[in-house]
Image 1 (cartoon, rainbow, N blue to C red):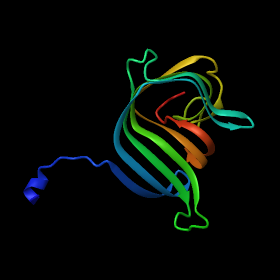
Image 2: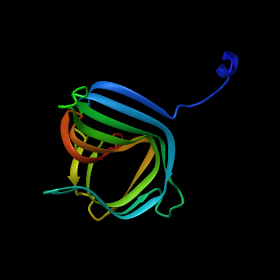
Image 3: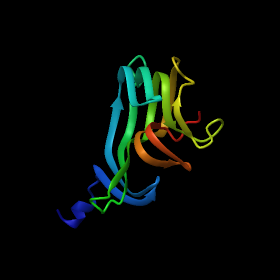
Image 4: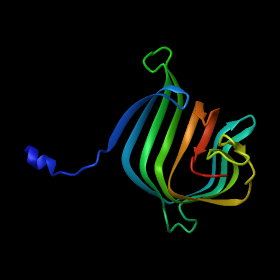
Amino acid sequence: MTDAELSSVEAQSLIDISQFTNLNGSQNVIHVDLGIDVDIMAHMASMKMGYYNSGWDIDMTNYYLGSTDQTTPLKWNGIFMEFGFDNISNNTTRTLNYIDIGTPSANGTVTAAMNSVSALVSPGGNVPNGVLQRYTGLAGTNTTVTFNNEPVSFLFASKYSYNGANVTGIFNKIPNLTP
């Protein structure tokens, strides 16, 4: 192709990899953006993640991604993966602190009986730093969360800093949700 032909081509990259320092409590963070949009319609009778002595981090039943009548999907516009490390350049002391997988822009609904939820949300009210850990206030009640171009992800963390709080466990990360 000539330079003139190439300049008229429009495209989007499939993958973008960035590295950051001192982010979310980690010395080094690798952030991978995938240029992928996903429509999700799923139903799970039960989803449980992160069992510890004190219970499940996430325990949901009758869990719908997308509308409960399975006609309208939950849309993820772009997917990212983020990996937080300490000592990334040292093979013997390198530590993986967290993995965060999600989307910067979700549209649609999620409905479930949220028996226990660990979530990172907007600070406010009874959640000053935005950390809900094994919250059971919605137990047995069908709850619908509606996303409107908002970020959402699943965070798996042995070390993570969120609004000044150091957290460990498995979390739904919904920073624009006010509890």
